[in-house]
Image (cartoon, rainbow, N blue to C red):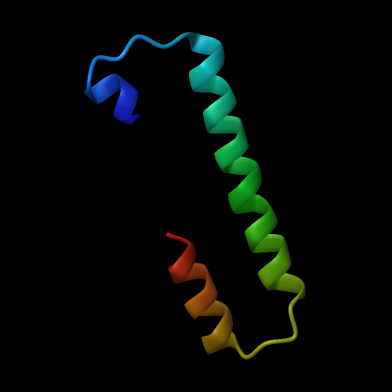
Length: 51
């Protein structure tokens, strides 16, 4: 997103790859927190710390 705001030329493949990797990372974080044996408040702290 920053590249588009600063008018840095990027390809559609680069943009799509970045978006897919971000979605995968967030998905893995959610799955990891879902399976973690932590208190709900601790899971919330981990989730907020990611962003």
